[in-house]
Image (cartoon, rainbow, N blue to C red; front, top):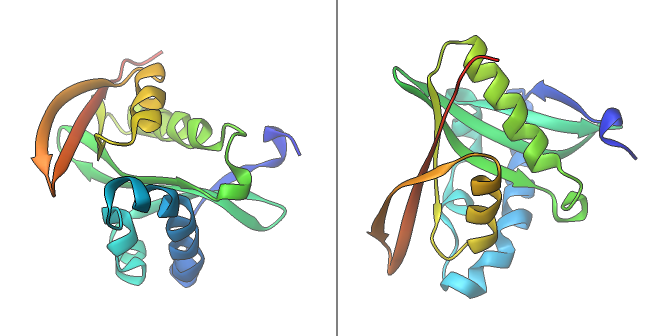
Length: 155
């Protein structure tokens, strides 16, 4: 299937279990690397879906990926990006971030921000390719948290 067959839409509260399942599957590969569940695996998604915006990448009725965002006065925070393992490598994460970037610009947010684990080198590399820069690095749970930001400019 092509990217053209994927639609992005806002999640509904009844989709919390499906969202949680994708997050658990997507982040499972990191558990051996860091020796614990990454923070997104510890979230109550019933609550999160009620409190945050989740945009879903959907193809033929199946949720392939998600992006969770929280608006702040001076930026749009990306709390989570996850793609189902079977759908990884198709550009769905990049598609969700590009969608969110456009949505943030329309809403007047001057930048996107996120945090990732310093051990997740492939994620840091992807975010860097997408125009994010490291803002700061902090110690976090026997590792590091890498805070990144992407200034937005209307096109």
